[in-house]
Length: 181
Image (cartoon, rainbow, N blue to C red):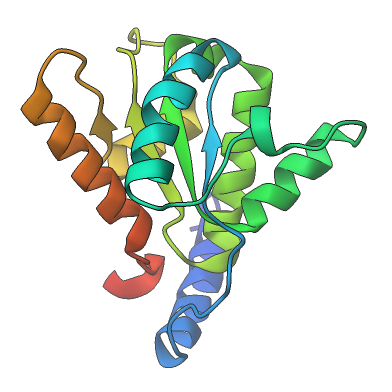
């Protein structure tokens, strides 16, 4: 127990916080965005021509897309934190470039901290391109191991329709992390 004392304290805190959340009402926070989109710069064409068209134009979601929604001349770290907190969910578009990017890692860590702070399941992981084995960080691996994630399929129309339906569902459902406690 001595060796695991920090994990025990952490889980005690989470459990205590979880019981408080279960006894309180559901999340009624008003958010400016339905989702913050975290992606590598090289994947912006897919974000612009696929994600934004499908989710914003066809399904009426409001996305925070850094290329479009970040103001110039401000501190990037502060903008990222602010926009993630103003978003109900964070969509992680996982590619080999994403897992190598310092900024994507920072956005993932901020979304993960919001997950712990709010107690709500705020991360929606999407594997946009296959990830080589061994390239995923330990914390991202834990998220992928414990959560369902979506995979983009380029050539199959039926698979694309199912992908968009599942992504839309993931953005509308608010899950509390502590429901199973």
